[in-house]
Image (cartoon, rainbow, N blue to C red; front, top):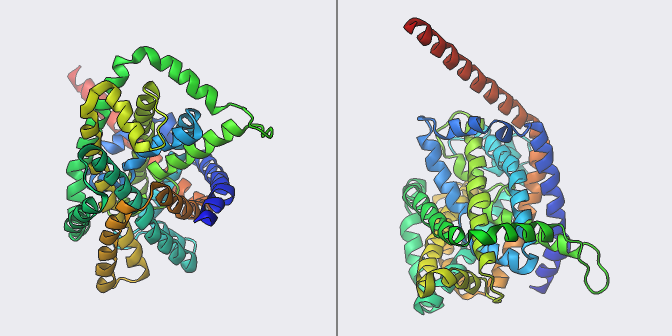
Length: 446
């Protein structure tokens, strides 16, 4: 395990940042950051009356991203990277929007019978079937670490803190609950997330907003500290210049990626199940996904943690303590329930990612049933392993997936640009037609 920690810290994480930023900036230039220059285009795609199937796919993708990374992951980033990690988390999010958009566009374009994901465009667009299979294997492994163990561990910690339920008992409960939902396939999973995710987002946003509003006078000072520490060239013993900034960047970006999954090629699996025929329109849902996940929810969590700072070694205790400073003893129950729901939503979504990855390798129904059983067993394992081990294994697989996917997105950026240009031209033409129609109606009234 020490070997994995060393490889993560010294090799994979630094390399991943380079791949992520280079690919993200390159694709942002390719698509001319249209979603920032013309946010109305994105919003109109989201509220289109024909986008119900796209919204269903979005809730499944959000279930995969809106896990404990939005709560415990933010606490982890602040604990190890300082308050400056919040700034890098947000910077990384805006770069990641382009990556998420690109991978969703490609996933829709190269899907097969509503089955899609990074392994499909690696195989069919780049003609690299061996790399595609390797990526699918990594995705299956990640479903057991990021998608299962981290979520189970965080949920077990929360119920143990609030309700004193032993880890193994909660693991067994999670085993049966997870099995009951995921055995129904995408339809049952999407029915579950369609009801749960919007409700979770609204309640959690409301709780955080209440704390922030009642402490609004502290926000300017906190923002100043975040900005200062994000670009701090503080040295440590030995004179390593820039240590503070590097640490903030590393943990902010890594936990941001763990939270929104942009660039690692997993969320497009859920988006591929959408009924849409427009890759770029579904890509707009990917942009919205990153915005809600990181810019909104992660930022809200960060402000709450910085308003009521806590130096506990347990990130779960830090979160509960921060909310408890405002809401009192009831906070442990409120946050515990929220974390369990967030974690469970992520669990069921990642089981779908794992099944789709396995389907790409071998569509056997027998293998699917074996995978689902093992996945449910990992709910029990995840509740009993240490948090540090779960994060280390997750960082290892996610880093490799992200580097592979970023290279593929870089190579396929021309395809993304072509789809984007066609989409923007279509949107422009639609606006022109609506404008002319409006003028004709006005002329008739006169």
